[in-house]
Amino acid sequence: MKIVVFCEKELSAALELIGKGRAIAPEATICALYEDRESCVPQLLASGADEALSMDRCVDDCAQGTRIAAALSALSPDIVLFPATVRGRFLSAWAAAKLDTGLTADCTELSLNADGLLLQTRPAFGGNLTADILCKESRPQIASVRPGVFARPEPQRCTENAGEPHSALTIQQVLQRMDELAFEPVEYGISLQTARVVVAGGKGIGSKKGFDKLHELADLLGGAVGATRSAVDAGWIDYEHQIGQTGVMIRPDLYFAFGISGIMQHVVGMSSAGTVISVNTDRNAPIFSCSDFGIIADWRETIDVIIEYIKKGKKIA
Image (cartoon, rainbow, N blue to C red; front, top):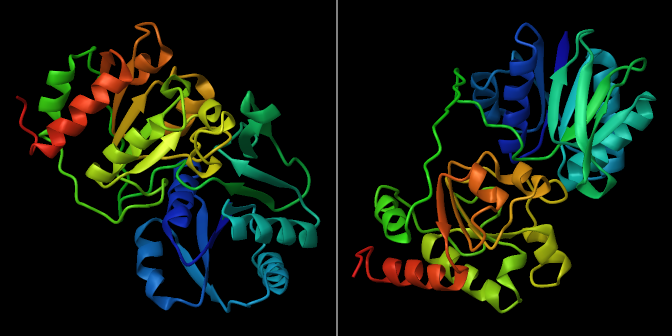
């Protein structure tokens, strides 16, 4: 089996796809198809690619899509994976049309079925369901995958980390645990998909003004602000902050969930977070089942305490 991964200038998403390709097909030959930059080759090979092939980048993406299709025709891969970025979506669709094959866009999971076909999973019906899609006849099987869905492989090795969730704690206990975490200040406005810290709010935030507090905390921690679909639909925050099946997939080191109930469509977007701290007045909220630390309290009072705690140099009065 041969798998081709298309690599954009920003390599993170492509490295995730190389790692996933190696995970689902350990014996496959993985070819990284990159544009121009020779300096990326060692990183591609260290992350699991067997080959790294260069192609010139054309300013016209229509022409580039045709070039990619020609390269794929020559390589004859079984599977082709593209990052589901704005450009990746366009190029994958163009190449699939040129090759007269199918494309599953915006995938959130990939696996091989019993027959060795690529099982492509993506959100359907507005994110309320997931659909499993097979390309049974035409080749290659092409999929674009949302950045951040899969873990980026360690150079020359892949590891899986698992931990037992903690029981519900008081806010003081959570703050004490935060002393163990180190955060480097970064420029405000960091991408939600690359942020090490994400402060997210849901319907429980109640208003657009409420998100100002979340921005304040995110700013203090050098992080980004996220939101649920219900908060975005209410007009309290822009769509670019939406996390979940109909938004972005993230994997920060630390994730705050304020006023978020925790329905499946949202949880699938943040389930890879390192540490999850949830604040909700409903002790039966589903979000607590996927949290490391749970605080049953009003989010406003809790965030004020956390902000004050950080401003005082992480010393509890």
